[in-house]
Length: 163
Image (cartoon, rainbow, N blue to C red; front, top):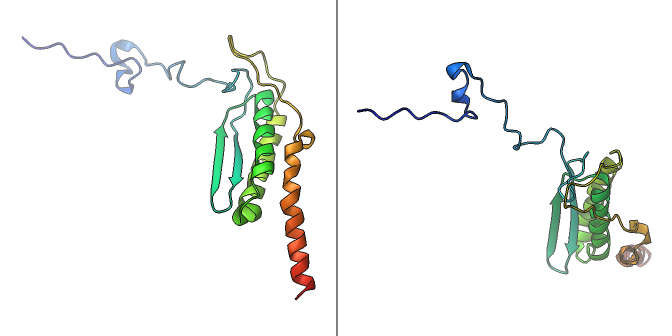
């Protein structure tokens, strides 16, 4: 007696055409047709990465949150991580010159992409939308970045005038 042949899954490409049945193009749950926000589930959403950088005296720490985000949740994440970068991102030499400025530019580009989205629809059932909070320029911790910038200008001016 022989064992019956195993039937391939309808989602297996080898299944297409057997018994006159075509395999579905994709499983409905694998990839949504329109991306939804990873925080609240609202649509439309944009696939962006938001970054933060923390410069320590001899070390650095990087943080990245990948989307997709709706306009409201994405704006909240951009504002929070940008403020953290302005507050903590300047305290090592490489951070001051390279990493913090690039992180701020990346977040600016993500912010522009999110701002181009229409207003988000309702959040998914059981999910809550993240509050955008205050803009970055109205957050006191964002102004800590002025300290290393003043120091850099003072140092460069001192090097030029005392040379």
